[in-house]
Image (cartoon, rainbow, N blue to C red; front, top):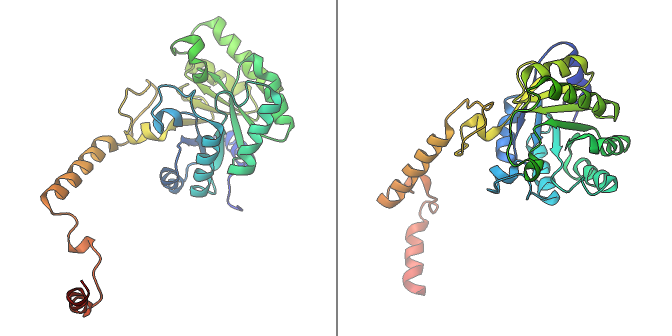
Length: 284
């Protein structure tokens, strides 16, 4: 744990104008690869509901599931700064539930911070969780857990009045005790202004280049998202097409009898095959 990145390390990076690299991923195998790329932060996002479980929103994912996959990511990436996403209904029912569930991520999964999708209505929730000694990343801008209320997502703070409202909300989150902000799908000018005014670490998710760091989900980075990705996502590989081709070739070799071959099979020790055949003849 002596090499584990801390919030102090990230805030120092902000002060020194070094950009934070963050990735959202959901499983041990991917997290091991992410860790080897030396990213600063991993968020285990509730988008696992979509990318792992196949739902059309983030709403159905459970606390138990999120705790389990967060723990798996921590085992894969022991040194990355680890943030866990508070899923829908894990904090909305009251502050006692919020503190209890947030605490599970730290105690059971090794997370260092929890992320809460936050409007003004949840300032007291941010305050109570923070007062319990649990660092909070307040998620503002586009709020995926509110899809049932807003109907569809659109860019946030694209008018001056909306921009000022979001700037004030960011300030209120800091005053309530938040340790970091994640700004999603917001006009770049506004996200930059928030970052410049805030003492907190500010991570952009589709909110332009002016924040302290950037985050994308691993499937988008790898080109594994078969559905249409959001405008702000960028694929750095086309592993989706390459994966399909690999599976196709695998199927072809099985059907043609080329796999498994001798190289990919186990064999008896030298001299044992003849003995085995003798035993078969005498015992069967």
